Amino acid sequence: MRLERKEHAESVSGDEQHRESHAQLVCERRAGRGIGFGDRRRDKERDRGQKEQPGLQSGGGLAFDIGTLPVGGAAGIGLTIIGIEQTVDSLINDSSPDSLRKWNEENLLKLGANRDLIIQFLNHPWYTLKQATTVTASLNKTETNPDLFLENANKALTEQDARYFEQVAQLLAAYSQKVAPLQSLRLQDELLCAVDRNGVLLVPVSLDYAIWTAAAARRVDALAGLAGSDSNIKSIQIWTDGKASERVKAELGKRALGYQSFSLIKAD
Image 1 (tube, rainbow, N blue to C red):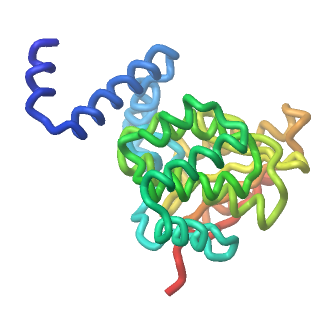
Image 2 (cartoon, helix red, strand yellow):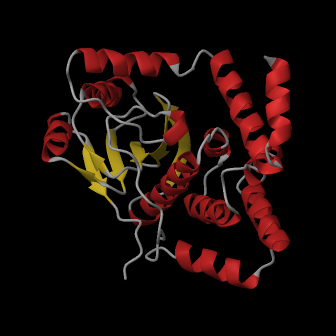
């Protein structure tokens, strides 16, 4: 098997080989922590066996089973309202690739990011330089240590994963600028979240259209339980760049979970 893999690797381009090696490494790391794909896949099969409509993936290769339809196209993404789009466009137009890379590295370091995580992020095969710059500009708006974000973003296995994290970064920026400053990032049930300085747990999710499923119910119930079990969490807000069905909105309301749809699409 190893010989066949080596022969195959020699037949593909350097970029493809890099991506294949990266994907294998990430899968091995996830499996080593006991957070492999098996449990989520079994959940989906169980849902299908119960003849419930399954929640599809919202994070591409990482298979974030949050009971949603897949994240859509990235065309025209930008946050004009809080200046991210203008910053990125100006940098892209006025900077060479090397100077742009340096800008990303310096700004992530200023936020307190670990240098190894930064290097891995900027060398990641699935993030374009423009996407990396959008992420950095967004994280700058949050003014929080981005290590947890980078750790998760570096696990991207597909272009869809990279787009997901790019949009999550923008949602974090939008909330911190429009609602309240963020205090810290945290991982909640494998979803990247943030806590603001008022004790509100922000759950940023990038999707097209959210539907109510068994998987979504489990996620939402787990989130709703936090407000009573974690003294640091006063309330919970779910922010998305997509839309939710009326059933989803009603179920969130029953559990006293806030919901806000914030468009990341540039107006024509």
